[in-house]
Image 1 (spheres, rainbow, N blue to C red):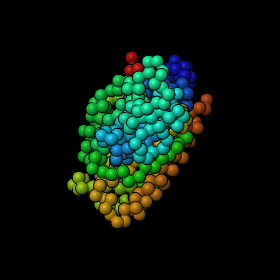
Image 2 (image 1 turned 180 degrees about the horizontal axis):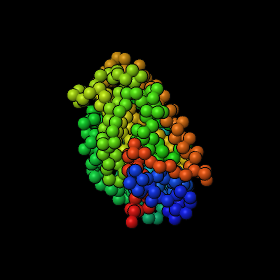
Image 3 (image 1 turned 120 degrees about the vertical axis):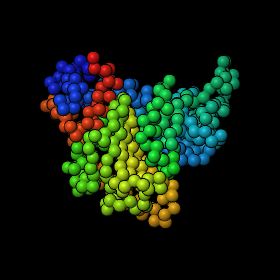
Image 4 (image 1 turned 135 degrees about the horizontal axis):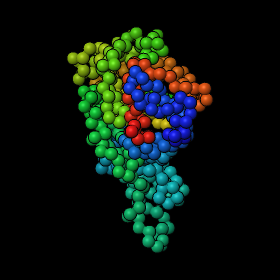
Length: 381
């Protein structure tokens, strides 16, 4: 489904979303349900941009590795013997077999099919019965590299042959969220969810503060306040929002106390940032949560939620019990959101669906969607 096809459907004019907020409508359903749009998103967003892959501390020692499928591509992240982090395709240069599964610690990667062996940086070490193959030079053979960079303890990769400047890509996050000091935090937990919705709905929901006082009124909505004036709009659809919210516990209390670098902030300190294409960051007085959405089709996505606490908190002898309080409380909120965004997704493929008018409370979503349209279809003429 291309732009022209979308425009010929009733109520499907993309320009209605490009209008100023008080006159705008949401996007047509095809943007969230079309296989063609999904494949275009992979090419124009996900295969070009910097993508969040986790924490450097998950690869603390030389030999630590993890193999994952990312957007259908097999990827290895590993720390080599010189303590350098690297990323490369998990795809043997002989027949394309994945050379390793899961995660752990190893000295080498050995293809289970024909035994080709690679070091921790992806360089070929040995290939049996290949010395008589004319022109084969093992010194020039390696697992294909993937660009990798880190920001304050967080790992990003890019599939692009020439990715955009990483420093430029992270400039707004650095300016707005350096005070959260994620480099002084440790990973407490990773939660994985599968949602039956388009990846954009996952992020739209996280920046949709319009729904908080309704859907979440019995969980955290009563301890939450914001104004549209506190929304900072960034290039490419990025967003930073400052607001007031209690720590993410049933009581609204920080069970470990404040992060040492946020002692001067009130208990209600809260911020959110979105960096296209798929990273949403939440900062609170006591922790940082990073939510990453991976599309696995037009109507399904995989979500990873990383919870970080200051290093000092891990010395608390009651740490595991307190962490469970945070996790259990957040699970309630995730399920509240799941019910709504999966319901929205079911409407997107229906011929009777017409996008509704936006509220002034949807300023972040309006900005994100307009950045998305510029990337997908070009700036409005």
